[in-house]
Length: 294
Image (tube, rainbow, N blue to C red):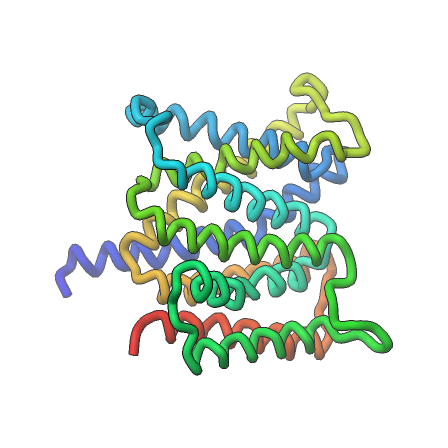
């Protein structure tokens, strides 16, 4: 391996770890905004608007082809928009680790979607991954005298976010003609669009730009910076490292989230949640190894 290749690999791994760390802590500034009276939908709209505005400036040379993208970019915007928005809403209101572990059931949904949409064979290993994921979810969600289902709207949102993430992956896999810039803008604009669709269902009035304090703007600017950095670093990492290896590295998000939720939100998981969560992580790692080839 040449020194140049080694440097690129090191930067790629750093990029994935940095992106995972960003997503592992991004829930906290969003909670700060909610405590300040700004809902998750409103703060998501503003933070992704800032991100998209900066992106349009950075990608100004690509404006010429902005309206000449394939139709798949719209489906990507819808799927990725819901994935990111529902994830933010879930981590604001739910227990961080339970939300993230439900989100990491995504390999299960990816296998199912790939089987029926991409016509990929599931195979024995794929069925094993499905079984391990379901067993982990059953143990983690288990509660006496009740079905093992998500217990509140935040956990249902987390589950839907994982499904949306799988759908995003499948659409991305089929959209080989989309550039990284187009994919990034599709995600950011997709979240803005989804937030606008949810505004009529908000119980509190939508805050105008003049209603925010300087602290609010600084927090939202910080979130936007994290979002943009995470997106670009992760995309760089994925272009340099096989996706299957990258998916395992990205599990670092759970480590960061576990530490952050313990110290910042005083949240701790029970033993059966740890056991179920471990099985879900095991299934994700197994899925990555299976995806890397024979």
